[in-house]
Image (tube, rainbow, N blue to C red; front, top):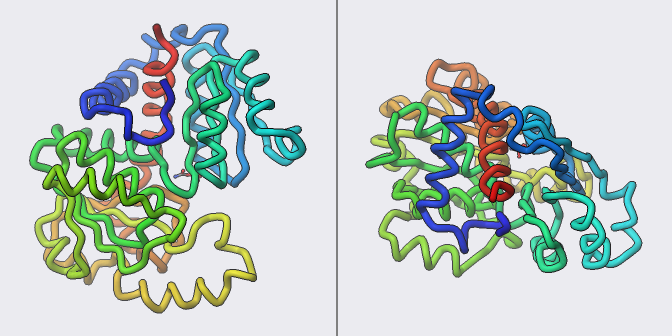
Amino acid sequence: MHLLHFKNWTGKQIMDVIDNSIEIKQNPQDYQKELEAKSLAMIFQKTSTRTRVSFEVAMTELGGHAIFLDWRATNFTLADIYDETKYLSRNVNCIMARLLRHEDLKIMAQASRVPVINGCDEKYHPCQAIADLMTMKEVKGTLKDVKLVYIGVHNNVCNSLIEACTKVGVKIIVVTPLVNEPSKDKELINAAEKTGLYEKTLDVKAAVRDADFVYTDTWVDMEFFLDPKYAKEKEKRMGIMMPYQVNAELLRDSNAYVMHDMPIHRNYEISTEMIESSRSIIYQQAENRLHTAKAILLALLKK
Ligand code: CP
């Protein structure tokens, strides 16, 4: 079984990983030998702080070992992804990959004889969504009758949130004036619509009023943020998105907790005062990437 997205995962399977993450966070000492002598290959085409650190520390704390592979320093750059993965999966027990293109991740999954985990591509970020739901459950004690409002650009993080929320019974409203073209997934949206738990609006004030959680993310994907060729598009996006910044004025009539998957661009998608406010659960959410990485690895690797 792989974790590329949630299309082939049931709500129960997702909930089990969330609940196991909470259990592991509370009793880490009970899991120190669970992946003894197991190895994880972590391969990155893009930058990362949390995904790399959380999976590497997770393997260490579960008694196993993680190998960091910078794509540019490997022979993936000059050979078929299929062939290189065929080899890789004969030497490690699991592969976590952050690739630019989901199509390449699919090739990796086809070639691999061990589980492949999507560490974020242009379409999905399933590991992030599991950490987000774990954090929401920690804070509220339940995911029943919970309402999440995602405000920002419709991107990979938004896709995985929609997919995971609607599968575990959380209502999700998205306020997304812009859509990242490569993230579009009609099948995912159609499936979410059928649950009755997914809505789309541009009335951001009304959406946040009775929200339990308000979530935002970068308006410009990580691989473009510092790219001078993308400067004009970035400026255009700032103009469109600024009225949707998560700030104290927007949340004046709302008691929602504030979430962000990080990295943060302060005073763009979210104001500094919101990041630092008592309703911010952003750092708890980021910390939970570690506990959920452990639960994901155990779900995929334990017989
Ligand atoms: N949220 C997240 O995936 O963080 P990194 O890009 O730093 O891994």
